[in-house]
Image 1 (cartoon, rainbow over the protein chains, first blue to last red):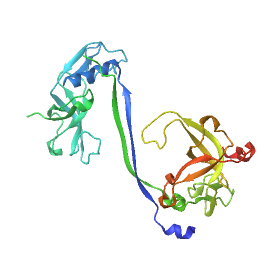
Image 2 (cartoon, rainbow over the protein chains, first blue to last red):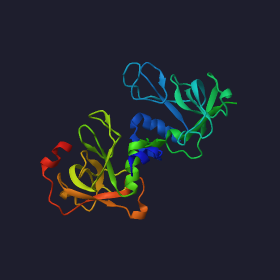
Image 3 (cartoon, each protein chain N blue to C red):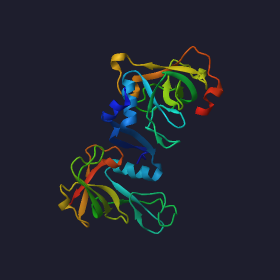
Image 4 (cartoon, rainbow over the protein chains, first blue to last red):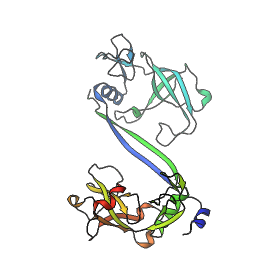
Length: 153
Length: 161
């Protein structure tokens, strides 16, 4: 194939699909959080300073100290503290229709948790709005057990 | 309550890969059962596949060279970790093959080779798919296999590791 001819040919393109299932161990604290989701219950953990972190973590991000062993049930309702609209969801995102990613401070929690809000349209979203979880029919012990949050009516 | 020990997190990327002109020429050559490289006009090195320029000299490469579909294993590793969508079951050999006439090795898998037999300097040849199945893709070469030729001397490929 002469190069001069090849120069006139369009470059080749090919669709690439990169996918791998990444399995991660979650440890005793998040392990308790996910086990709670399986029971349709959201929990946080209390820090030594008395705050409730949701999702629970092994360490207090403010001090670096280990958290206490006190798990605290929170929610199910919560308040949106911040959000961004996803107009064109991708295949593995939690909802296939446009939705909001939101930071949601569940009742009884001192920190907000990231999840999806099914609000139908961006105009329904506002900081401070009340939301509640919509659970999957079948729970497995993973974050997707909460299909999404939806506006409280 | 029984704790959850692990979770599976999906990682997904969908995108269109555009090869650019140089790699398109290479892949169209592959579709004809030929392995094409390009020679640098200054240092005379032959790049396979060519990226269209010599990284060492910083000039465009324009002289097209067809190289052999046999060559020498310069380095290799044995893949023992399974993952999804592998063309071959582990363990198998992944080798850097310096094709005769090329100055940089290309990575490919080896078959028809016992793990304990693979070595630096081993002579190998490409095993192609059937002619009617050739296409502009590296999977047109199924794998490399050992051939009955004496090992290449280290001096012949030591500059190409």
